[in-house]
Length: 273
Image 1 (cartoon, rainbow, N blue to C red):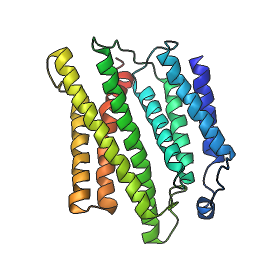
Image 2 (cartoon, rainbow, N blue to C red):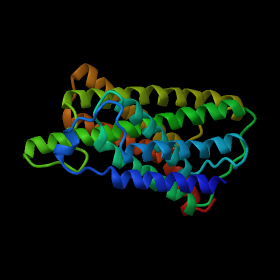
Image 3 (cartoon, rainbow, N blue to C red):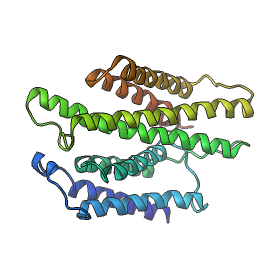
């Protein structure tokens, strides 16, 4: 059952990515009538619901929980799609839709080809689940922030060089609005990441008797938190904008990706553990 629902979500995401791909700057800026739904929008909505159903099957005990890197990416892009849906109610972000659908489809495809990573939750199962959920929420928010940042980078570069930006990542809305959305998402992601790290310290101290376990996941997680802290401090105190701020956002997100997804990838694919 799970593989059928997963496959349906993959096919619908792929359809939405192909049908909804940008066809030029004029199409990106064209207003859409209120309440109007095109094929790409419907396909993405159905894909998102099918994607959500795979998690429901896990919660209902019909599929064993998988804590590997591929399901983590899958859940991340499901959350990114959810953020997109909320924002698209207020801002013209149609160009971003195709990229999100393509990334979500790719993450679902990965879950088919890599072996599952099953772990037995510790005694503090609720605390562990809460920590994991907050960490994935941070992944989703920073993933959305990175996609917005890519739009911002492409639009600024296109303005400076007077040539079109990357397809779909053009100025679909005012640059100041796009910048505000980017760092609003980054701020929310930082809050969730902070909560995840605090819960990890409390959880580890209670279960294992020590607040930190020195490993790659801890090192990359703390390093990414420091980079994001510097980014937000630079934005609010020093007025960082443009490419300087985006470099900090992209660097911190790369370290965060290496923290959980990277460590799980090494364990599953390289070390076969």
